[in-house]
Length: 273
Image (cartoon, rainbow, N blue to C red; front, side, top):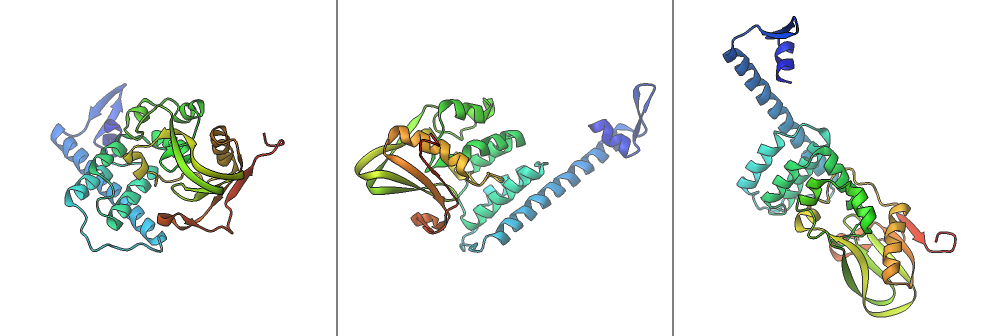
């Protein structure tokens, strides 16, 4: 890659199967340093542009009146300058937007985790992130491992609190239960009124770092296929489950959602079983 840059700059050429350098080592080094610095400026500018886009798309974005931590900003800039793919630039832009809106949201160690993720590994994470329900990735063991493609980095990244299946309990009083995901609310419908605490979701628990980076770009919008997988796992725990639906948020902090707007739904029947 270095020789290719020198050839394009007219500082070297191939001759009889060998590299011939047309400038001395000092001039070649100066050119490569300038090229590196220019690339870093371009990378940083691209990440800042993505942050601006994310801010423009958020109708409720506001600055809290609290300054962003300068050490965080230095770390962010260092890593953003070395981000060469469009996909990861979007991510770094969203990270900066989130930190501006809520200083201290992203611990600096998370930046290190993200910097070590390749684009392919980030895309693998988005596959399992779609099944995240209240901090738990609701997938069975085979689907979970297949989705991660047994990526050693993702298993060692600290994005998951445990790779042993966990179960979360909820208090249910009535025929329905609503649970927040990172971008919508899912509603569970039961065939009879329930009362008490039930083990509802089973899957793999995200770490705090994993929760915070659910803003990865390009996570697929929830659809019936996702709901079907979630449904059958929950039904093993709560046999009275007959239907599941997804709704857009009205207020995510209060888990308020639009009951009259359905993103998708899945209903158990003999045909769908």
